Image (cartoon, rainbow, N blue to C red; front, side, top):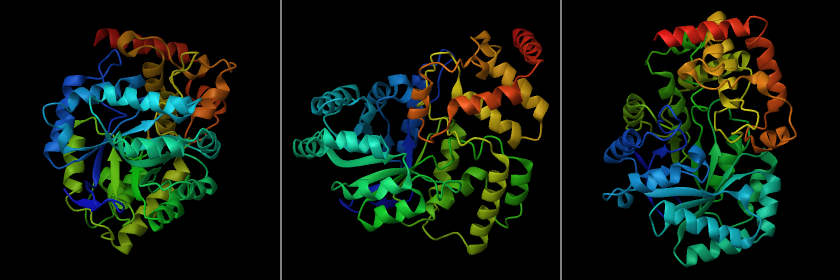
Length: 402
């Protein structure tokens, strides 16, 4: 494992951090605690020392789970990060209430890296008026938090003013080879580093979209490289190639992914990719932009939908329709996964969206600023159609037999 120094305090942090937003789950949607605990402890035993969670992850299950997973001496081996749910804050008192509850859930007396969660310009203005600076100063002074930071999902023009508004220790931004100019982007990465902030990277694989279904046209480009790497390795190496990056978070929920990422984290030095390799990644980026339809990362912030739509899964299947070379197969998988065939669950397909009065809230909550109802209409048009009920019925029969 390679380590990089946090500028403000000198902490040696593993360049690979364990993100707890996409833990393995059971059929009922609850965290598979036995498996997830083994995964996290395996990663820690192999050098990972930064673990990240948040109030809403896994519908509130992530923090209590992590408190249990980090017993038996594992809490002392890591720097623990969690986040203040900024959108729920209505008063200065709320900030202490949430932090104290998180300390209890996580079974700890302090948070090493505490973030104001999912800031955009307007939300920052709101919590700033509620005196979030006083909250952070006092929480640091009394030892409940060690380092103060923020995570950002807003427009690039708001990022620098938030960086300059408080004496932050670090920040967390979305960054990957498709988001070099999106949100904070490369300009924000470099600005934060120039101001002495450590930079934590989220969504290096864009919610897995850069690795789950690799289009043949993209794989053909990867295959041209003299040094062969899996798509996840290319994406992670590209982020780690930036010397301004301190830690890259990965939402690892498969054992083989953890092992693969640990291997890559042993050799991902800054500025280690050649110019030819960087140009190869650039070509892959251009090809993805030609193919992808929606920039969803699967973060689940838009959920639950009051009409029962599984919005992230609808968008995943919509992208798969264009990324995979099997449109009919993808239409069948959409019917199977969203039509209630898999595990004979409730339907969650896009046409359940009724443009209800709450649809503005799902748009507001989306860190990628996707016009969710409008894109769901496109999903209906391209993945449902006149024979949708027939495909759902076929899928249900198939899953009954397996």
